[in-house]
Amino acid sequence: MIVAGIEPDAEFVHWWFATGFLILALFLYAEILVGPEVWARRPWRRYLWPGTCFVLGVLMWPVMAFFTNSMIHMVAHGSWAQALMVAGAAELGLVRGKLHSQYWRLTSFAGLLVSGTALLVHEQNGWLFARAAFLHHALGWMVIVASAFPLMQAFRPRSLVAATGFATTFAIMAVLLFCDRDVAPIFGHLSSYAGVAHR
Amino acid sequence: MSAEFARTLDRTGREERTESLRMRAVLALGPLTSAAGLGWAIVQPWRLTLLHPAGQGFWWLVAEPPLYVVAAGLLFWRFVARGLVADMAEAEK
Image 1 (cartoon, chains in turn blue, red):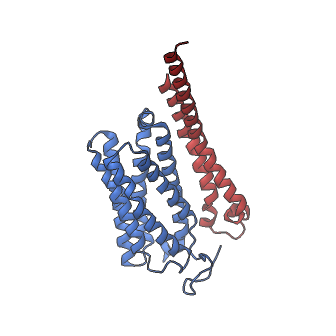
Image 2: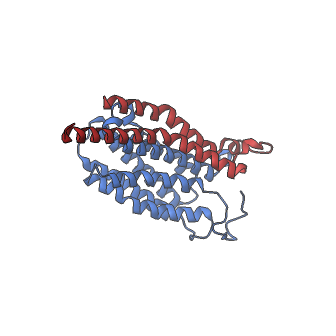
Image 3: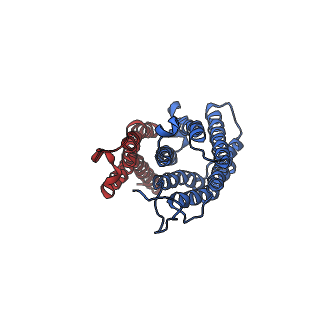
């Protein structure tokens, strides 16, 4: 009860993750613009994207612990945390030179696939129940479709389309997460079971 | 001027223009992001609880999403973009 009294609302957490994804998107866009060689000229820069991905995975654990109101929420957030950490760790291994095979990038594909599935599985309400429900469905399907980009990157690492699509995935995720509200209508729809709308 | 030399000059000019455009794009990423956050703050000022803090709880005062967007753009520009452009210029030499 004490934790419930002081913990932030779910929408705040979504906005913090949105900021993280926005920063990830900026890193990825910048790397596309300058090319991997220039991006890697300063060693710390190579760790930015995998490090941020790994940290987002670590931060998903407190989300799992404090914001789960059902078993399905807990399993979804837990698997999501693991997928993000594995993807971040594999990318860290690649930039550090500990891992060599380009197919380790398949962990990013798996990370997005698990993230999308987790988003869909833990949203029990229909699309137009409330804005949060709509965003979970939209994000889930978008992320599952977008997992094709890292899959493409694993086989064609220099593909500009795959890299741009991957970066844009995080930009769209950020926008959608910033749109999240705990109780708000979506296209004029708000279920009477959702509660009283607030700004 | 030989045709080959003219072609080389033309190609070098084109490459320089492309490099310059890429540098500008990298430098523009941060300010554009911040501008988006600023635009959001203007369109939805009620999202900034700092503008009317009376009666707001701690988390509502911490959660200022338009300011997060502005900060993300500024931090990216200050700590990543400027160094990247310097490295691009160095790589060209």
